[in-house]
Image (tube, rainbow over all chains, first blue to last red):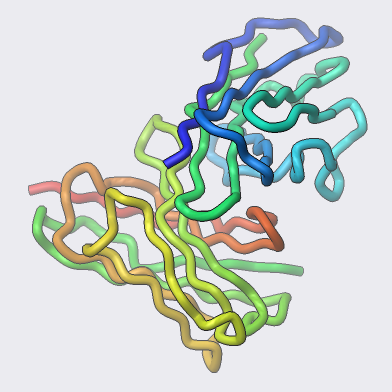
Length: 105
Length: 118
């Protein structure tokens, strides 16, 4: 099973600031995604294929990386971006998620 | 509009069984690979398993903690995917999401809560 480790666990920032979230895989992955989850809501796909924005995701969100190291960047935080973000691989099963990074004010 | 509606969550005793259902609409169900993802209270996301579409063999894959206890099946005539959960443990307590997508997960239901407690 591929283990995904996210850092930091919590990111305390202000609106307008830049957020950089990291995810490291225990072995190389080819298919990688990021999800956003707000309290009381189901997760929402933000990035797939490591760097492609999902439908409806604003361009302040960007994904990068390959192999074992991946990054989600939010260029200028808006109030609605404060949430928990999970990374995920979707290579051969079992799919796994990282433990999450909470972006808080 | 794509909709996934889960049902069947309940309070069950350890060792018991439960079957969750997920009815989908808004897309061609028999072309979809379906997955279940769970989230324990206050915890992160955990992939449970998936079922391929029939044209790809309809085969299933499971996460290690549920393999041998959980079974995913589908009824394409009813646009429904099921999660049969046997030998339930307290650590199976979670909100269970029905999901689907091309590649990864594009769509999520709102979840159904399973509580395993004596």
